[in-house]
Length: 124
Image: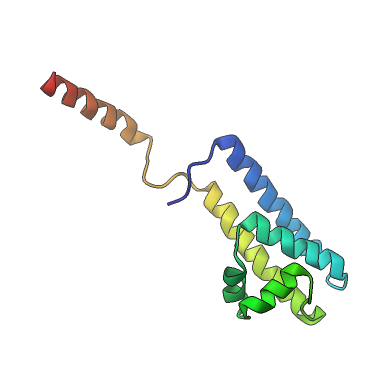
Protein backbone atom coordinates (compact mmCIF):
# COMPACT_ATOMS: atom_id res chain seq x y z
CA UNK A 1 0.00 0.00 0.00
CA UNK A 2 1.40 3.41 -0.84
CA UNK A 3 1.79 6.05 1.85
CA UNK A 4 -0.73 8.83 2.08
CA UNK A 5 0.77 11.95 0.55
CA UNK A 6 -0.88 15.32 0.12
CA UNK A 7 -1.77 16.32 -3.43
CA UNK A 8 0.75 19.17 -3.52
CA UNK A 9 3.59 17.01 -2.23
CA UNK A 10 2.65 14.23 -4.63
CA UNK A 11 2.72 16.72 -7.50
CA UNK A 12 6.17 17.96 -6.40
CA UNK A 13 7.49 14.38 -6.28
CA UNK A 14 6.11 13.64 -9.73
CA UNK A 15 7.82 16.77 -11.08
CA UNK A 16 11.08 15.75 -9.37
CA UNK A 17 10.90 12.26 -10.91
CA UNK A 18 10.27 13.71 -14.37
CA UNK A 19 13.22 16.11 -13.97
CA UNK A 20 15.39 13.20 -12.85
CA UNK A 21 14.41 11.21 -15.95
CA UNK A 22 15.50 14.15 -18.11
CA UNK A 23 18.82 14.39 -16.24
CA UNK A 24 19.40 10.67 -16.58
CA UNK A 25 18.72 10.76 -20.31
CA UNK A 26 20.96 13.77 -20.95
CA UNK A 27 23.87 13.03 -18.58
CA UNK A 28 27.37 13.08 -20.06
CA UNK A 29 28.46 9.48 -19.53
CA UNK A 30 32.14 10.34 -19.91
CA UNK A 31 32.06 12.93 -17.13
CA UNK A 32 32.76 11.08 -13.88
CA UNK A 33 31.56 13.90 -11.62
CA UNK A 34 28.28 14.30 -13.50
CA UNK A 35 27.66 10.54 -13.58
CA UNK A 36 28.34 10.26 -9.85
CA UNK A 37 26.05 13.21 -9.04
CA UNK A 38 23.18 11.72 -11.06
CA UNK A 39 23.74 8.32 -9.47
CA UNK A 40 23.58 9.74 -5.93
CA UNK A 41 20.58 11.93 -6.78
CA UNK A 42 18.75 8.93 -8.26
CA UNK A 43 19.33 6.80 -5.18
CA UNK A 44 18.14 9.56 -2.87
CA UNK A 45 15.02 10.54 -4.83
CA UNK A 46 13.99 6.95 -5.52
CA UNK A 47 14.72 6.03 -1.89
CA UNK A 48 16.65 2.92 -2.91
CA UNK A 49 19.18 1.07 -0.78
CA UNK A 50 22.52 -0.06 -2.15
CA UNK A 51 21.15 -3.61 -2.11
CA UNK A 52 18.05 -2.71 -4.12
CA UNK A 53 20.21 -1.02 -6.75
CA UNK A 54 22.63 -3.95 -6.78
CA UNK A 55 19.78 -6.43 -7.26
CA UNK A 56 18.31 -4.37 -10.07
CA UNK A 57 21.65 -4.00 -11.87
CA UNK A 58 22.86 -7.55 -11.12
CA UNK A 59 26.01 -6.40 -9.35
CA UNK A 60 27.15 -6.77 -5.76
CA UNK A 61 26.10 -4.43 -2.96
CA UNK A 62 29.73 -3.49 -2.19
CA UNK A 63 30.16 -2.48 -5.84
CA UNK A 64 27.18 -0.12 -5.64
CA UNK A 65 28.44 1.18 -2.31
CA UNK A 66 31.78 2.09 -3.90
CA UNK A 67 29.97 3.88 -6.75
CA UNK A 68 27.75 5.87 -4.39
CA UNK A 69 30.67 6.84 -2.16
CA UNK A 70 32.71 7.83 -5.22
CA UNK A 71 35.59 5.44 -4.49
CA UNK A 72 35.11 3.73 -7.80
CA UNK A 73 32.82 4.19 -10.81
CA UNK A 74 31.61 1.75 -13.45
CA UNK A 75 33.30 1.64 -16.84
CA UNK A 76 31.96 4.22 -19.29
CA UNK A 77 30.54 1.40 -21.42
CA UNK A 78 28.27 0.26 -18.55
CA UNK A 79 26.97 3.67 -17.59
CA UNK A 80 24.26 3.95 -20.23
CA UNK A 81 22.59 0.72 -19.12
CA UNK A 82 22.88 1.76 -15.46
CA UNK A 83 21.20 5.11 -16.10
CA UNK A 84 18.59 3.37 -18.26
CA UNK A 85 17.68 1.18 -15.29
CA UNK A 86 17.19 4.32 -13.19
CA UNK A 87 15.01 5.81 -15.94
CA UNK A 88 12.78 2.72 -15.80
CA UNK A 89 12.59 2.88 -11.99
CA UNK A 90 11.76 6.60 -12.12
CA UNK A 91 9.07 5.93 -14.71
CA UNK A 92 7.54 3.31 -12.46
CA UNK A 93 7.33 5.86 -9.65
CA UNK A 94 5.69 8.42 -11.95
CA UNK A 95 3.06 5.86 -12.95
CA UNK A 96 2.46 4.90 -9.31
CA UNK A 97 2.03 8.53 -8.29
CA UNK A 98 -0.34 9.08 -11.20
CA UNK A 99 -2.66 6.24 -10.17
CA UNK A 100 -5.63 6.95 -7.92
CA UNK A 101 -5.26 5.70 -4.36
CA UNK A 102 -5.98 1.99 -4.19
CA UNK A 103 -8.63 0.62 -1.94
CA UNK A 104 -10.82 3.72 -2.08
CA UNK A 105 -13.32 4.82 -4.66
CA UNK A 106 -15.21 8.07 -4.18
CA UNK A 107 -18.42 6.28 -5.19
CA UNK A 108 -18.19 4.37 -1.93
CA UNK A 109 -17.88 7.45 0.28
CA UNK A 110 -21.65 8.01 0.31
CA UNK A 111 -22.27 4.30 0.95
CA UNK A 112 -19.85 4.38 3.90
CA UNK A 113 -21.59 7.49 5.25
CA UNK A 114 -25.02 5.86 4.92
CA UNK A 115 -23.78 2.75 6.72
CA UNK A 116 -22.38 4.86 9.55
CA UNK A 117 -25.69 6.72 9.90
CA UNK A 118 -27.59 3.42 9.89
CA UNK A 119 -25.31 2.07 12.63
CA UNK A 120 -25.92 5.18 14.77
CA UNK A 121 -29.72 4.89 14.31
CA UNK A 122 -29.70 1.23 15.31
CA UNK A 123 -27.64 1.83 18.46
CA UNK A 124 -28.91 5.28 19.35
